[in-house]
Amino acid sequence: MPSVAPAASTWPEWCYPANLLTELRLLSIPFILAAVVERRFGWAVAIFAGAAVTDGFDGFLARRFNQRSQLGAYLDPAADKTLLTALFLALALARQIPWALAVLVFVRDACILVSALVLFTATPFRDFRPTWWGKAETTAELATIGVALLNAWMPNRVVLGIEQFGWGAVAVLVLVSGIHYAFTSARRFHAQCG
Image 1 (spheres, rainbow, N blue to C red):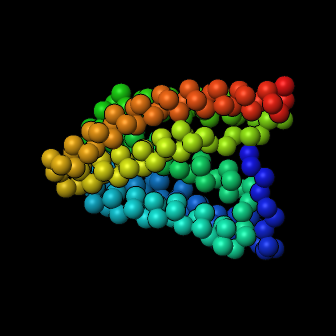
Image 2 (spheres, one colour):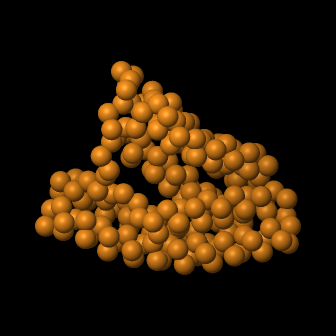
């Protein structure tokens, strides 16, 4: 985990504006899932767009107010992954994306989460930073989910083509980033705890 500069505030970390936005994103997950399950895709698009805006804005706020925190460093990627994994599974249940893709995303994230929990609880290792490939994969997931929700709301042949391209990009990036993250984490672990 990267070192975090001390905040210039006496507020508890959960009250920092950036962390409040991340917490809001976490709270939005049941609502967007309900919208997908009830096939209210217009609402799902709106909630997802709001979540995406908070995802971009929370980092800006943390830097602007010098309120980077350990809580935010863990909470932000957890919120992103929880939202995306849940949406992949919900959209597969709604038959808007292939089940194979949803399972692939879920298995990769579950493997990373379980290995991180084991290392966190059993060793002093704490360097769980995402890799460049992981960030590219998350970006591809965000874009594909956004396009899939849009296509579910207002079906269009061009949007469907973009969505299907996203399925392939996500599948490739899930595999590449998962393998790369495993090797990178092993190298970091041996450098820190070896």
